[in-house]
Amino acid sequence: MDETLRQLGGLLLGAIPTVILLLIVLTAYRFLVHQPLQRVLNERRSLTKGAIERARADIAAAEAKAAEYEQRLREARSAVFKAQEARRQQALQAHVEAIAQARSRAQEQVKQARAALEKEKESVQTSLQSEAERLAREIIAAILRPAATAPSPLAGGRS
Image (cartoon, rainbow, N blue to C red; front, top):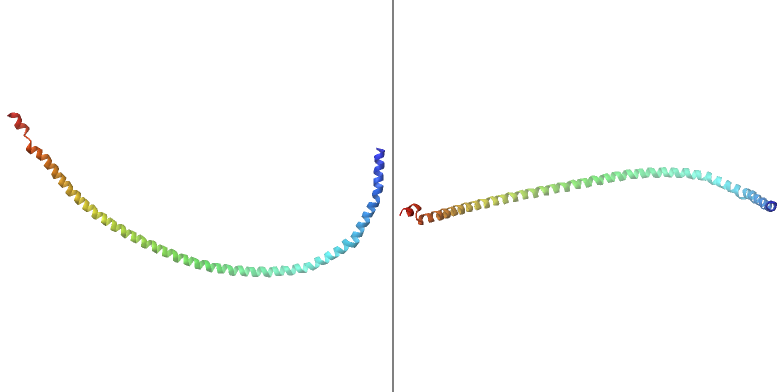
């Protein structure tokens, strides 16, 4: 343990010149670099404050111009939207008129088709009626014919 302490003391004694040199370099840095650099930075900071104020004024002017531009843009968009709406209304009106015309044509075609169907129905009913009458006459004739040619059951049983 004593040996370790002695070695540690030797290392500390050897580090003293390094610490002294480090302090000298630090002091030289402070006087030669840090303080002049701080002065230059402070001057720049004071100069940039003026530039910042000018920039803020320029930004305010630019914002005013941007607001004016946006207002004009809104007005132009509004005019375009109104024109588009008018065109859309015209197109919608034309579409409605076309639908109305198509609907009236379709209704007329339906009327014509119904009339044709009604005529066809009447002709079919007439032909069916005449066919039914013809079939009824044939059935009646067929029923009456065997009765007229066949011997009467009463006559044949008495003889």
